[in-house]
Amino acid sequence: MRNMIKKASLFALLPLFAAAAATSATAATTAADAGTPGEIEISSHSKSFLMSITMIGLSEIGDKTFLIAALMAMRHRRILVFSAAATSLAIMTILSGVVGHSVVAFLSERYTSFLAGILFLVFGYKLTMEGLEMSKDAGVQEEMAEVEEEISVKDINKGMNDVEKGGEVVREKHLKNASTGTKIVHRIRELASFMFSPAWVQIFLMVFLGELGDRSQISIIAMATDSDYWFVIAGAVVGHAICSALAVIGGKLLATRISIRTITLASSLLFFIFALMYIYEAFTISD
Image (cartoon, rainbow, N blue to C red; front, side, top):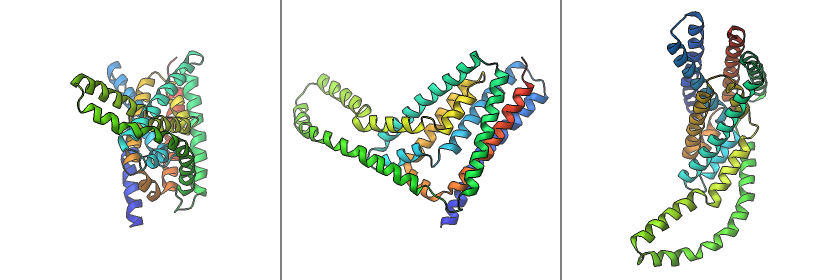
């Protein structure tokens, strides 16, 4: 059964490698053939979008923010956890993309592409070393235990707020005889309290702080230095949303069953591919 799950995780990575291969092939084709400006622009946008979503897909599976969403989904409603995690990661991604693109104001795109390539080489090397040092059966039990302990400490404070819910039953009885307008206003307030409840804010902040300074965030900053930064941001937001959805649906089971060593080595290969593409672009870009 374990071998079947590992094989399934490998098959799940195939579309990501296909996307990476497609982006590299597209870049080579556009560099070799002189197409129309519109075709080259569309190809460049697609490349940036696919590279971003592929990088996030491989970097976030089994990551700390992934585990936070997976464990919180066992304590709260999945839609609440997903909305909080996806919103937090989207805001972080947009901020990272804007920061990365602002670097172009101080350095030319040639230098930023070269520096991004060097950064991806460093990430690829570090991930390769980490992956080779892991055992074949390496999992995320230690990091998951750390996240569970962090959540447990925060839940102690949350328990203090549950005392205030005693009046909700009384309010529901009054609503039965209230007017339609009053009921609509109450439902709107319920929706607002759902979106900005203590649990929602807690998940939002935990994911935001967990992503701050993460490898994927730094990678988005580096990738957003080119002119297609909005497509980089869009791809990262979509990738984060997909990973968040996987986390809340069955993230804990997935994280404990897949081979973290395989994910790490696959990520290192992807970073090496990105490094070569950015360094090649740095030497071929027109001033």
